[in-house]
Amino acid sequence: MKKRSLIVLFLIVALTALAACGKQKAEPSTTATPASGAGEKAAVTLKVGATAVPHAEILESVKDKLKAEGVNLEIKVFTDYVLPNTQLSEKQLDANFFQHLPYLEEFNKSKGTKLVSVGTVHIEPFGGYSRKVKAVGELKDGATIAIPNDPSNGGRALALLEKNGLIKLKEGVGIAGTAKDIVENKKNFKIKELEAAMLPRVLDEVDLALINTNYALEAKLVPAKDALFVEDKDSPYANIIAAREDNAKSDAVQKLIKALQTPEVKKFIEDKYQGSILPAF
Image 1: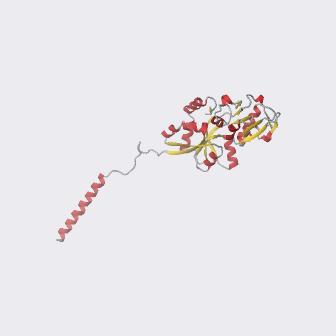
Image 2: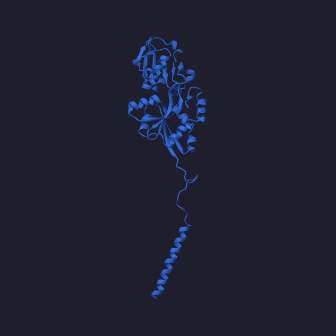
Image 3: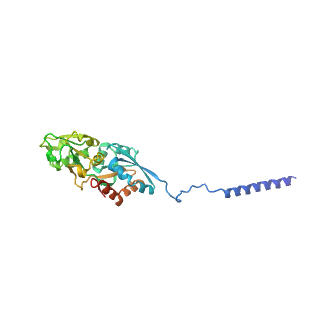
């Protein structure tokens, strides 16, 4: 009797084991496979700060190209020249697109940041605008001239005023000049320093304003048509993609600059801005 019970118990255990094996073979694998093929990397989000015109517009033109390469481009629009660098440094952004290298270098120096240029995209020829005169020779004694109040663009504006015969700067200061470096001002022009974004808004209040092209375009001013004078097309102030030292060589940032430096983007810039903005690659 005891022997028969042991045989029955053995048969039960064996049948249970076989059933378990059969169930295991019938279940599908639980390993996830990417929809478009094994081994595909997950898309990454790249947050880029930019001023609205033309920077955000140019970035928008490469969104689809980057998406096809696994990069979701998220554009955050700013209206000033400080926050895009501050947020980049604090890692709230992955890159930004709004400035030229002299401005970036001055910002790093004054703020202690370590931001770097990844590559150049376009040049925005700086221009002088007026709603009161049609030529610089018509500016009267004591006329008010507004310029940007940040060091790099302020020096750039003064150098352009000198080039057009309105003032004379201390020899050798070049684009690093300040209002204190003016050594000749025959018409006693009053130099008014304002935040760059404010300059289009004061055109009715001043006699002449030197305005960065991005802000000029936002104000519906066309540099090639509306400016009394502009920088030469060989201006060294090419606008750049900036990133941090720790992520400048990352795959996503490198894909961004590569996407921007293409014949398609060059044509986009030439067609859309009609000479007001020039490709720099």
